Length: 130
Picture (cartoon, one colour):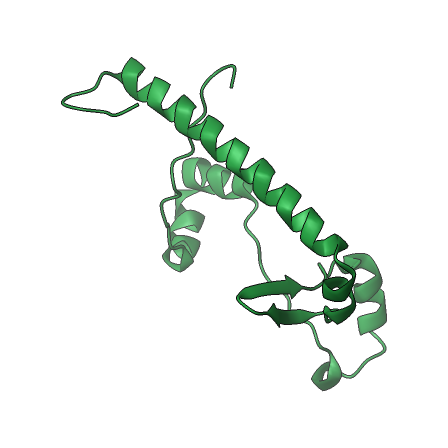
């Protein structure tokens, strides 16, 4: 569908649905091709466990998702010198708590809000029934 001058929301919604359908079909084809590539014995044998393997123009990145048990690490940390501890703590916002401070405790919010940077998210579109 080609959009010309001043399309309506309904026309743009229809165009979005067509584009999303084409995107989903292309993704299914890509995933099937990737599955077939990984079945190739010579490719599978040459892949390194973690990193990038190159086969002509094709690059395959492999690796692991690393998920640590936070409670166990906290227990283990007590017995290891801090300069040998290979982890760092990261403060993550509890949005319900910060929203409470914004609304109910502006004095506290004023102290912590200078540390906040807001970056707009990319809008996500969905069409009901799709």
